[in-house]
Amino acid sequence: MKAYLDYAAAAPLSDEVRAEFLRALELVGSAGSVHEAGRAPAEILERARAQVALLVGCQPEEIIFTSGATEARNLAI
Image (cartoon, rainbow, N blue to C red; front, side):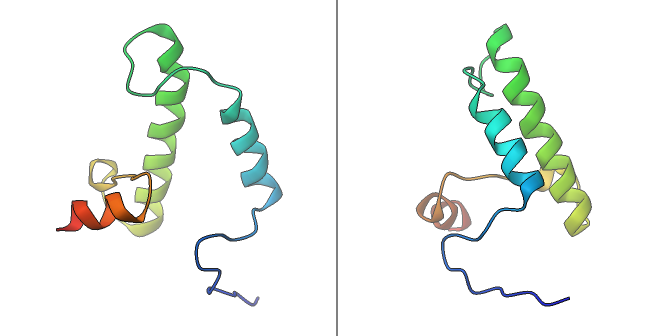
């Protein structure tokens, strides 16, 4: 298996990832909302957090998703 890791800001999506992404785009609520429309996005976000934590060997609470590089850099500082 070969892995090309220099895609800079974007990389090709697998069919599985693309399908999940398209399903998530259909949702209209915010994961940070407490009302019913926010429940499905919150569940998707928590599932992703748990999957990433398992992948890197940490607790889900240690995974923080940011909206981009600037936010991530500011968080690190």
